Length: 420
Image (tube, rainbow, N blue to C red; front, side):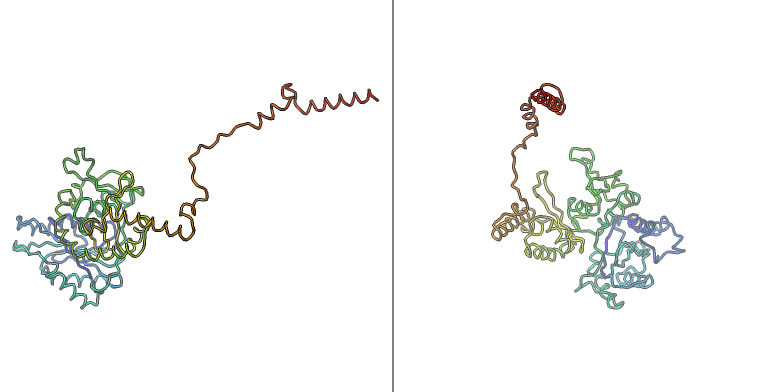
């Protein structure tokens, strides 16, 4: 089991994220602890007001919302009743058993997982300290629940979770809903430390994060909008302003995540370097394509940034398993864009030399039977017709050749008769 805790400023975005999934048919509310009444008949406003009643008791606390996800291995067979028990015990073990919370079961992946929405403001207005809650309380709770319920352990084994990217497709669902769900998920789950890294992750989901050109008013005012990308990587449909999305993924709010995300991703850095080292040194790749395919098999999506003339000037590595993002230069010099480009160039030269030594031909001679030429192709002419026209004396009479032959033949016959 893997537990992830994300704190936020307000419950509205968290509730909308989960309720949108329910409306889309990819999630269901399976538990409402601390709520009175029938949860099936409870509206979004009623759920939001339940939390708002507590957060208003201490308006000084800005970070007053928690969004928790419990992710299980694909081999863990868990029905709703079992998930309810696990979620309830987990909340008790981390000190939130008396808090109101909602548990949603999501069906948008191949592994079972639930999302929990709650607040850290108590009924007396006091704030629950969530500093270091991950390693202080969540990790011990996770290990105890794995043992109690016979769950696949997160340590010592790579959990078999669905790591595929669900790319947005224009027209299948309302544009705002598609963009809101994906942007909220990325902003919540991925540890990025720059806008370029954030933008690279979203592109993998078929979403464009656009600030506009540097000389535009939108860029000057630090505006941000999102759009769905088509198969050619071009924006389609009407863009959606960041401020109009419930989770408020504006530029200011995205930038606030950079510093804490640097801490979140630290523990995954060495593992990523080890994987990159293994892939880059195991085989020689003649181009970025085979290298990218090999990395994707390992759960790493590289994003190559090239200039208009094709020069590689940047590379970002997205670790899909651990939801972390690193620029090549942040890892080590060997994984920067310059180093990767040089390695690809050396690999191309090495393969060319090896083939030449083995066959006596360079690769271009093996694949192309004719050497390229830059001579202009000769233009077609009617030279043969002109020659025949000049050598045929009967063409000047304007009489068809066949008729002239008959006439000439008849005259010869008459001459022969006179001779006889």
